Image (cartoon, rainbow, N blue to C red; front, side):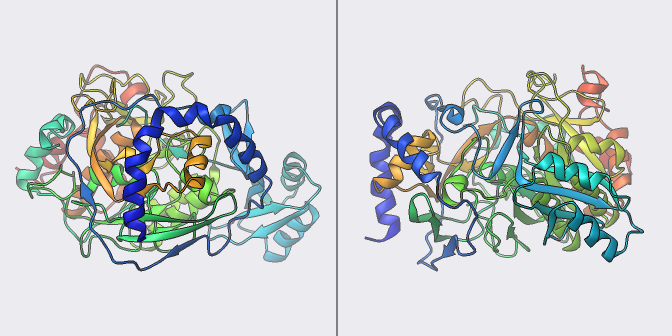
Length: 534
């Protein structure tokens, strides 16, 4: 039976699994998970293969009005994904057996090699910012000892763990321009009158969980569940001929950054969804070209489909995020959107952002979603204040107050609509964009239930879409990225000048500087203030 037919049959059956599978098979599947966890963790080169199947278009479904059931919490089933360790103090994951090392500019290659050898570490090939190296720790040596040894070398400036970064979207997240109150909030319709949707010579890189740029079946080779064919479709009303450039998947190391979470799809839609075509919803800078770069495995799930299909994958690590940022800058991205963050410091990512800005790219960064959970420092947002041309973006709700989750720190420089919802169908308060039909992706299932579903022949599919109201600083950030793209298309090419203009012409709202920096981004005021529109 063709994969697409099989998936359609399995989908209709899985509707009944949503509530019954979780308890009935938990013990059995958890035992299977423990056994599967003993499999080799290193991702294999051929872990994802395109089949070049007969393409079928993505389907944008009707508006959903009934909220989903509560999503299960996978943390009790598996606390730490394969290949990672967890720092309880920082509440952050980091790659097991890896460190990031920054050498002095003056240190020769011989001196660098000696420092690595004497510290018991080995260079891992990655195209990182100048003077940075990703190293693997030799067997028998722990992270602390290796870091200490490296720090004692006169050739080394700094050493950091390879922390994991996650999408900055809040649950519950799950038709029409009439729902996009967020665009009116930043005076976008007025800006469109004089500067409609930026221009196609501007490339915006979305460094995130991916974006389906082709319609096809990909076969994932998992050491846990074997070969799994999964159907994907190019996102309707977003992906079109010439729209996507230099797409890359840094998790699977290929040119097809398929999105198994929906987060990158939603973020990219806010920036560049096709507009004024009587379909779906609108995007801020709808004429730009997109460079989707997948660096995140999954979305807000602790253990995602990516972690099942490629256990031990490096998705979300500081090293590949930095690699993607540099890739974007080297491939002519003029705006880079980072709707991601974590509580572990990542100086390599700071330097990657500085490198990108130096190459002429403006960088928008999510400020983080832990404002109501201790308000910890979030990276890479915390570096934005050091870099003119990079901005940390906080979130406001529809009442133009700081969203409860939005991080508030001195490094927050601007705010944008991020939403604050009470259910996953709260279109009145959420930021609405095209996302996956959740029932088709099986993403509502717990980890054990996902594994059970796969072993019973069920398959997630990522070719059915619907409008989804999300919330988070992840949703706020692409508004700023979109406005920056509009400015760039009208001749403002200096990232620091873009930042200055956004701050200078921001709208004042009832928020402290730590909450919203200069205020609320205002597309019309910014362009008009620069004399770009009248």
